Amino acid sequence: MTTEAGEPQEDVKCDIISCAHREGRSGRPKANLGAHWLTTRQVTSRNPLSFRTMQTKVTLLDGSLFTCTVEKRSRGLQLFEKVCDHVNLLERDYFALCFRDADNNKNWLDPAKEMKKQVRGVPWNFSFNIKFYPPDPTQLSEDITRYFLCLQLRQDIVSGRLPCSFATHTVLGSYTVQSELGDYDPDECGSDYVSELCFAPNQTKEMEEKIMELHKTYRGMTPAEAEMHFLENVKKLSMYGVDLHHAKDSEGVAIMLGVCSSGLLVYRDRLRINRFSWPKILKISYKRNNFYIKIRPGEFDQFESTIGFKLLNHRAAKRLWKVCVEHHSFFRLMSPEETHKKLLSLGSKFRYSGRTQIQSRRASAQISRPAPHFPRCISKRNMMSRSLDGGTHNDDASTGPSISSSGSPGGSICIHDPRSKRIVLCITNSDPPAGLLLSSQTFTAETANTTTTTHITKTVKGGISETRIEKRIVISGDTEIDHDQALAAALSEARLQHPELSVTRVVVHKETEVSPDHVID
Image (cartoon, rainbow, N blue to C red; front, side):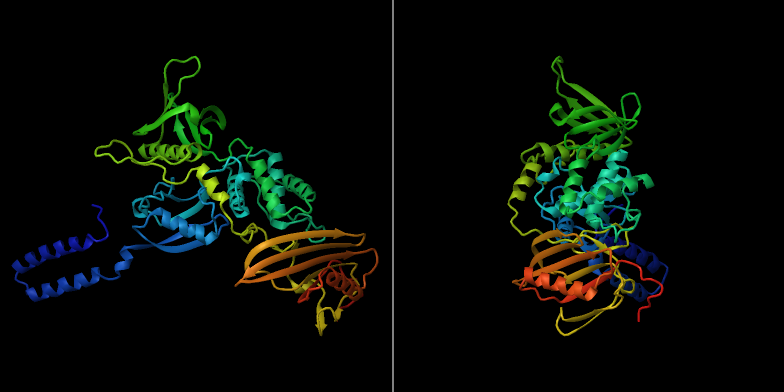
């Protein structure tokens, strides 16, 4: 018998009293029985909070783990809000928490119900995922929301849930590389620099070569722009945002029922064989393991028709019914339906309790905070680090020339290994920003032998605003470069463009090998 958290103490008490009567009749001293009674009560009353709280683990879209403690009686909304606050997300209505039950079936955590009534017999492990895929991602207000949507779609593509053609894989993969690694630089990227990233379930060398070919053409594209192009292409896929459920038709043939923003889709052998849009559906219901939809009569029909599908069991039918109710309410209604309490009611009392898409868009239009600063994660398979301008570099100091300076920055700077024909100068006036991002700008200028990328970031922290300037200067030539002269000219040009610039760090990267007869002291 399943009991509440406070009931086991009563069961223990009844068992001990009955045991005391039996032992009393056998002639044992009652003082020992009383001592046993007191000891039992002390053990059952230890750590009262352990009956009320539970440790939860939430896997976020970037693969990181968020852990927190919640009360068992708390509703799902409380945990969901904690996760959204942790990731700094305001457009929350498209997201939800899901978990796996004892049969490994995916279930969405109902924000209106107590969590202990939903998660039973399994650890409290959740995943933070997209639940309602927006038909037009460009209508999302913030870059961070679109970024999380991109992360979810990348998972869908790699896992095979969102099938793509070879051409689509290459286009989407190239935008992923631009978002994660920035502009292509032949001297910093190897011949197979995308092999460490994962783009498709069955990734081939030919696909990687095509992705690199496209990536080279995206010079100057920001990560946010790359993600926007990614979403513009992925939203056109036929399986975009489709939640699939196994079922059988009236003839017992195995099919898949897909729920999406536009309605209910029917698939057989991975091909769509029917589509029922939400305006065409009058009623959805389930009974035992059967799922029914009542269809509005067509132009030449006189009566409504009901179509039934058979699912694995009663729980699977109810799960599909709930997903349909939520999708229809979110994408089709102006506001969620009000629940009318009746003295006697048959069937499920479940109703969608969140905001609809229309309400969510209105709320998003009222967002007035500055664009949040958030780190874009690099794929787990990638081992390179990324600079502010989007390029990649190796942080190992032993691979580049060393620098020693004396006096003020820009004064006497000696660079060992003066024989390289190409150098990369990184000049900054402060450490990477840690406050709230107000604005970010990137400018690129090119000459015959020099490419200069200027990245200006304005942040505010503790009421004090700070402007960080990072200049990345690539100097190349057919002859050997005088490093001292090149660095002095770069610093002079930087000060002319930004008189307030106070250089605090200069990094020089060596780009060519040293001849064997030249030894560095």
